[in-house]
Image (cartoon, rainbow, N blue to C red; front, side, top):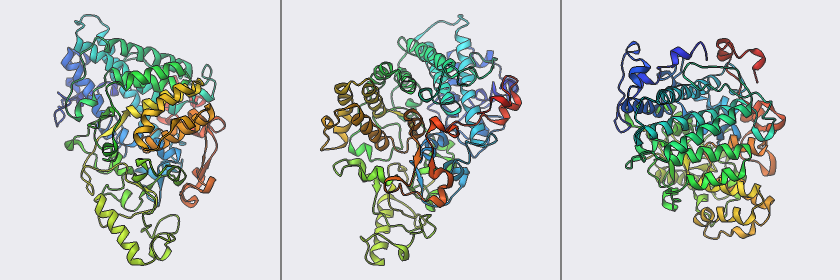
Length: 546
């Protein structure tokens, strides 16, 4: 990053906007912006923050020198977590944006891959601009108003969040390695600093300092604005507590994780059935603590989160390749749990190119359809109900959890990063790991009772039973929201699509990713350091490669 630091330092500043509520970006010539001007006052610093917000979902070439239109920030990184972990399953061959390569583990395992490079520089770009804000505030010549404290809290939260993302992808998992000696990622604490990888523990220590600094700032800060979905792109104390809960959970600090998770979800009630089935396409949902509000003037079209995994999006990635859930997970959902309804178990397999070889009426294996007319009628009914086009295919176990506001189009939808359900599950896992059986049951009960009319948490009355159930609940509740990768690393679990009756994935399509050894014995779970970084950073050499 040392060579790139000067070119990155203003990358987001020149795309900063005057307000997160506006539908356009204010741009200025690169050579007319300096940190002194861009960070002169609260309004200017808020513009920089708004640029960071936009950078989460913009095409990377608009924020990074050498970026690429095939990666649009967390549109890609969020579903990637479930694609790599084998939960978001491809039913047919389609490699738009390298999505098949990602799923097959032919992407993050290569030091020259676009995914490795863009994720690295995207997160460090966030850190760089957070550093610019923090450095400016720490100069001490600005009046510490509630608004300035809100800006400070957001900057520290962003730095903590970006560092956590980096260390979880480019280093060995905290709980399955030796954090005091395992290589971490560079910790840059001001706009002009760079350094060696250090250790995983070094990174985790800094995340803890940052997230606590964020919470301290937010405690006396102006509250986050209320209103439409755009307001939840701004970070607040709940987001900071949520990042702290994730950080503590990933390192096995169970009590801190539980306490922070409770604080994070305050004011964000669980969704009811109607909300849960509405498509997960807006920050307006009551559970959403943080998300990107993707405005129509900046849609990424065929590079969006929903393009990669939503079965109503009108793109070839979806029409030819309906995304399905692991049938072992879906079959385990009780019929009294309304979440089962968003997985269409008996959808006909209409794609003649389906990887399992069962596509089309001539290959139908579902005894529910005894005639071609019944088969075709079922397809038509699904397309009509969910707004798919005539070109969309259907497939058994396809999901309709993520649905567009305007199905069958390429219109943009929001990206949800943090919900209160996750916080209930973090508290439950943390208390189960402390062997606090009543505490874990109490944390699970509100979520389970809301989702399942016959839910009885008392049957999970041992640590082992609770952990198995928490893993199941995370798999169902957070399916498609990107947590599979970090969950499997934390739990040290591998991937086996063929076990226990099979997931529904085809070995011919998944190839080496059909069975993957657990993270503690397989370093392929660790993303490769970009070769471009090794070439550019004098503090990182070929011997530092994962």
